[in-house]
Image (cartoon, rainbow, N blue to C red; front, side, top):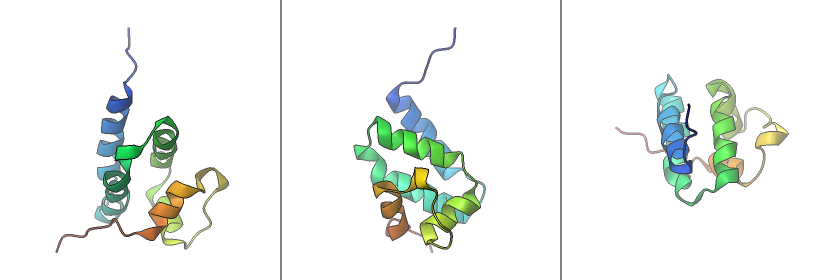
Length: 92
């Protein structure tokens, strides 16, 4: 019998997926966003982020940079926060 993940388990899985996207730029953008904002998330916000993780990095980054129209299903307060890009801390 497969046991469903707890809410905290889902957050841990989302954090891993956010920081292991395949490119450093996507890791910083998506992982950094998760680290900055996930603390106060409830079911709705985590569901939004899990759906975002299913999208191609190129698209997510274009939406965050406002170089491509964000699909309606991802528009809203969380995307507005993502578009601020003030959470990206690039090590030097």
